[in-house]
Length: 401
Image 1 (cartoon, rainbow, N blue to C red):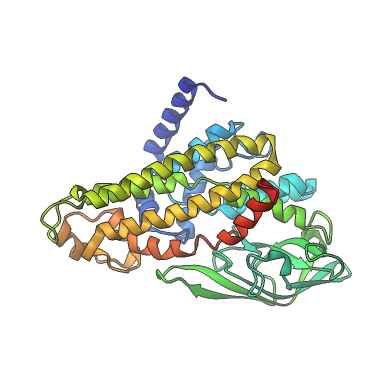
Image 2 (image 1 turned 90 degrees about the horizontal axis):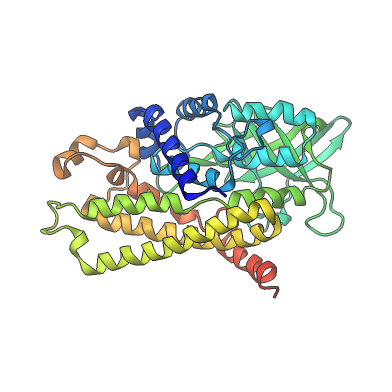
């Protein structure tokens, strides 16, 4: 673990880099989009800048393009990106596919897949949930039948984030009905442009096009798409979910809280005194700040555990998943409350900034995305396993019940 002085020097290095490379245009896209659904060209530009520095996949091993940073440095780096309002990057490739390919893939798969993720050339969609198998992932029924050197896939996946922009997908498919539900599942990685694949949009309540439903009709996938062993993907699936759940919620909450506090401290034409002077509102802010400090400390513990005890980290990641998503919902509720009559449910990029400016001065990220973020975050206690599922994991794997 780095000393306080070394960590501060690292933070200053990261901030200097961001100050130089994070242009106003890139920062605008970091501010303006509530979800990950920013233009692919922007994400590719920012990924290229990070890759040129050698920072696009900081948590990977050095031999695959990683930085060699400690867990503490990786977490600090991602936090600084969020605090600087950098564009959000698609996590499926860097945080999900990359680690499982490094852990379970062949050398050929590593050589083919990892460099293209690192450079932002391939975007990966996650084919896990199905209409009748979301949090109960073992109940999935999307089927793959062996046919010589190919698998033939039939079925559907839902809530497939950004599939309309991705060119690759990794899927859990059923290849056998024998044994427990967790058995007979296989992990396949393949092109989204294959014949027989249809992507249909699902628009969110906030107006974003982030989710999709993907249909597979006799899709022929080469057997080289197999990761690990056939009928034995449950171990890979659980390994991937640790990375999905054990990430930092605290940094994004810090940013939203800071924006909310700043806006509430301004005098608006709709109220005689700033909202921040209201004792009830200040109490709500204080409660979130206290819980955020607790979440921050717990996340640091889990990130350290990831390098030493994956099983313990996996179990505790369910705790931060519950705490982080519920706190994120509460802070977005407070953000909308701070807007009052300016809380217009519009897509950020369609907002009439000029009209808003005439009422409250220069438009801010808070005024442009607060409502969209509020709607988007209604689903985060469901995504990556519902809160109820996480409580079952805690009961069995942490408490031993």
